[in-house]
Length: 176
Image 1 (tube, rainbow, N blue to C red):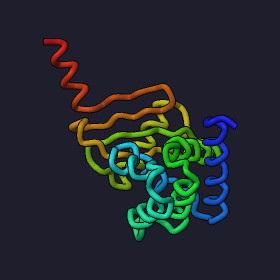
Image 2 (cartoon, helix red, strand yellow; image 1 turned 120 degrees about the horizontal axis):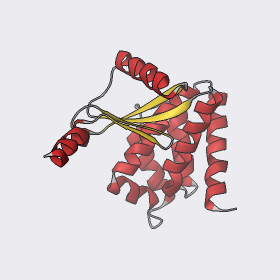
Image 3 (tube, one colour; image 1 turned 90 degrees about the vertical axis):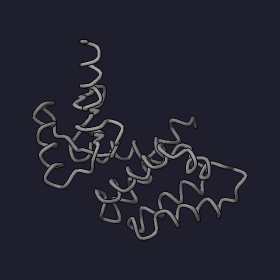
């Protein structure tokens, strides 16, 4: 079984457990944030993937990081994947789970980077605007990224909608 098939198998297993627990959407959102945290932190990624550290210590890092911040099932799923030695694949596994959950709801995933956190009303309006623009039912996953300065950047499959201040400044520089 190749790495791609293994990631798919783990994503399917995590999806089924989250669905069986009855709170798939919340667990999906929490797992998405965990994946982005791992991707953005070299230190965290290094510790979770360091085979020289005992597995109990790596799982303890997960427990400490997620305790009280996520549903117990979210913490258990991340701990399971880390314990199985697949922490390096965790973002890929989670992204597959997110896409599968969206497909189950007849949606596509829009990965949105925003300079600031979005409230529920802003998320709803953004979801409606992206759905209208793409002609598809869109599920948004928001990550805060101060480097874009303002606005948003949305990735929907291969399409990128860049409404960031950083991009506008780059365009202004190019025109000058």
